[in-house]
Length: 558
Image (cartoon, rainbow, N blue to C red; front, top):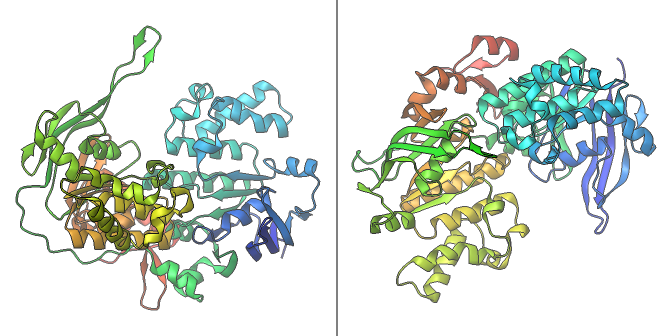
C-alpha cells in the first residue's frame, strides 16, 4: 500500500499561558482521493487539529509533541517560506463562515486572483479565464458580473460556493473543509457538498471534513474520526462506526440525533392565538445616484394561523422569506399590506391591542451572541422584560429571575456573568429564558439551534419542549434543519420565494408531501435513525432511487 497523503501522529497542543492540553496525542491518516470526517462537540479540538495541518495554530497555542507529515514532508519543522508555498497550492481550506473569511473590502475577482497570482505562472488573461470557468462550474449565473461584486451582495450559499471556487482554482492535493455547510438550508447544503465532491474527484483531491452534522458525514465520508475533549476516542470505517459504535461518547452522539415523537393531542381548533391574513412585506429599492431601483417583495400575501399551545414550524430554502415572516409577525419588520390578529383582534399601533400583543409575543433569535447586549449581565438581560409587567416589585422580579434561570438549567450564579463568559449552548438558554420570563402566550423561535452541536442541540430542544409544555405558549418555529422540525413540530408550513407552497400536519408533510418543492427539500439530504442494536442507519425520507444507488442509503420503511 502507498503511504498516506496526510499522516498525523501523536499531535499534542496546549495553551501557552496555562499549559492546559487542548489536543492530546491525536493521530489519523488521509489517503489520496479519500474523504475522512472528524466529528465531535464544540471544544473537542477537531478544528484546532485540522488547522495545525496548515500551520494555522493560534499564537496562544503551542505544539508540545507530535508529527504532521504531508506528502512525505514534515509540516511541523517546515521553513516558513516552504510552508507558504504549500498553503493554497497543495493544501486548501474552506472555512466555516465565508462572510468572515472573504475580504469584505475586495471584489470577488481580486480575491480569486490572489492565489493564482501567487502560486501559478499565468498572465492576467489566463487567470481571468480560469476564474470565469470555475465560477461557472460552481453555479454562478453571471460570472462576469461576479468579478466586480463584493461578498455582501451574495447569499450564504453563493458565498460558500465562491469560497470553494477560490480554493479549488489551485487544485490542491488536500482540502480541509471546516463546517462547510453550517447554517445552509437542505437544498443548498446538498448542492455545495455535491459540488465539493465533484471538484475533488476530478482533481483526485483528498478531503478532511470537519462537521457536527452526522448525517452529512455518514453520507460523504468513507472513514470517521470521533473526537472528545481533545482526544480521538474512536475511528474507523463509516459504516462500522454508525452501525456498531464502541465508545460511550460515540453512542451518546448518535443517541442525541433528533427523533420523531408521537403526535401530540392538542385542544380542538378554536380562535387562533395569532393569525396572519394576506401579509405582504416589501423591501425598498437601493438608491443609485439619482434613481432608485424597484422595491423587492419578500412576502406575497401570506396567510396562516397558530392555535393555542401549537408548535408550527416554518421551513424553506435560503431567501424563501421565513425569517422575514417571523420578524414581520413580531413587529420588527414593517408590513406593506395585510393584517395580524391576536386572539381574534386586529393589531394596530394606535390601539391598545397592539401593545398587549407586543408584550405577549417574544422572540428567540438565531445568534444569541449578537442579540444579547455584551454590556449587560445575564441577570439584567433576563429580567429586562419584567420592567413592563404591571404590579411586580423588585423582590418579585428577583424571584422570577431565579425561577426562570433554574428552569433553563442555569444557576443563580450565572446572573452576574456576561454573555462572553458563556458557551454557545448556555447563551441560547439565556435567550430562551429572556423570551419566556414574562410568561408570553406566543414565542417566535428563529433557527434557535442551527449553530449548536449535536448534544447541546438535543439539550436545548428538550428544554424548549419542557418549557412549552409547562407554560403552554404557542410557537412559530423557524428552521432549515428538517430533523429538528420533525422532532418539535405539530404542523409544518413550507415556504418558497415568499409564498406558502404547502402546509399540513407534521407526519403528512414528511411522509406524503404533495408539492414538488417540498419533495425536493425532503429528498435533499439523508437522515439517520436509530437501530435496535444501538447504532444508526442512513435513510432517505422519500426513498430517492438515484441517491440511494449512489450512497447506499436505504428508503425509510412506510
